Amino acid sequence: MIKNSETKFWLLYEREREKIEKRLSSLFENREPSSLYKPGAYILKGGGKRIRPLLVLLSTKAVGGKLSKVYNAAIAVELLHNFTLVHDDIMDNADKRRGKPTLHKKYNMDTAILSGDGLLSIAYETLLKDCNGNAKLILSEFTQGLIEVCEGQSLDNEYESLQNVSIEKYILMIEKKTAALAELCCKLGAILGGGNKSEINALAKFGKYLGIAFQIQDDLLDIAGNENEFGKFVGGDLVEGKKTYLYLKAISKAKGEDKKKLMLITKNKGIHRNRIEFYKGLYFRLGVIDDARNEIKKYSGRALKQLRFIKQKEDREILGWLINTLVERSR
Image (cartoon, rainbow, N blue to C red):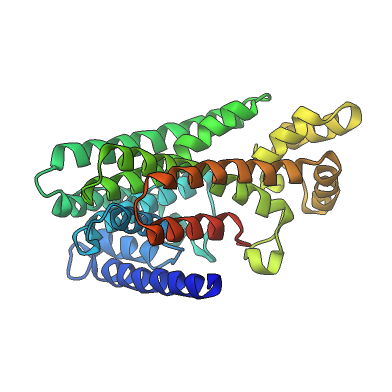
């Protein structure tokens, strides 16, 4: 029975993902100037799980709303997400995104900045089509979500230059940078679907906790994932000197020489690839791999508890399936 349900949910996911892809691929057709819209279309063709638009759709369904009335809102959050990716890649000077050249590498910096801004502008244009007389509230929530993401990115930048960052500060940062967008998706879907106050609040919290668990899982996969399934080399965060959940947990637990060696990661702004296995072994020895897994369970558990406010069993099950799929993923 469980396998049948999982198959049903996968089919729903794939069906809705296909609809989203079709809408995204046609979004910039016949729009001029091509110097603005062609790069925007390029970044959207980069693929991805399209989890954020799916969260809008599933949240609408969970409160008894019609999916047909929220596809524009679902597209809007995906455009917002891709806007943040373009600007993140510029700030990180990243060469590739999902195996393809990043926008500023394929074109140039000016084109990437302008195309990113174009994605955000069209996100608002698209969102307005689904507001249905509720524009002030919807636009306010969307804008607040954007502000939170920008604040999270700014905190991330601040932390790069700080020697000491607490785990509490790190959680605050990912609440804004990653979780705020998932929270926005669920909240928008619930509002547009006509949910009551308890349903809207519950789904917003579901999205927030899911987002935190998702990010810590990303941190975990970077060090403990299977390289063939992960799609990139394991240990990239160590090489770049990023302050991930695992690094901060390791610093808080390490003593003596172990702590000195860990502090070299940020002092030297990363490590050589030939040191990845050493630090991976240190993480396992300090127990931070298990710590991360426990933290993922904690936040995913909090997300699942919010589903008690959802009336229909099938809607609770599919949202539960989604979070389990995301936090147990291998890439």
